[in-house]
Image (cartoon, rainbow, N blue to C red; front, side, top):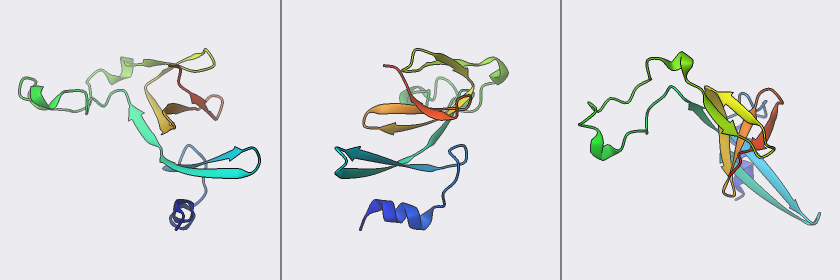
Length: 114
């Protein structure tokens, strides 16, 4: 059984803005192909879930919800080509220890720097 067949059977082809998974095809010397399936993650800066350590939940009331002043929050993302994006939310997936971010302005996946 090949995992890419599972992707073809359970999913339909769509644009990257709507996709939940991505199929990465790597070709080595025009002979060998490797197929990788990755889940696309949506990150929102205003969502504070996962920011507090579990040992400190009682000190902060144990609440992990959206931050109140979410309209003013932006985070800089430094891309591999030297540019910087200030975003409130972004889509990413990880492939071979590299994070790829969807740039809506250019409509392409770009690697994060570092």
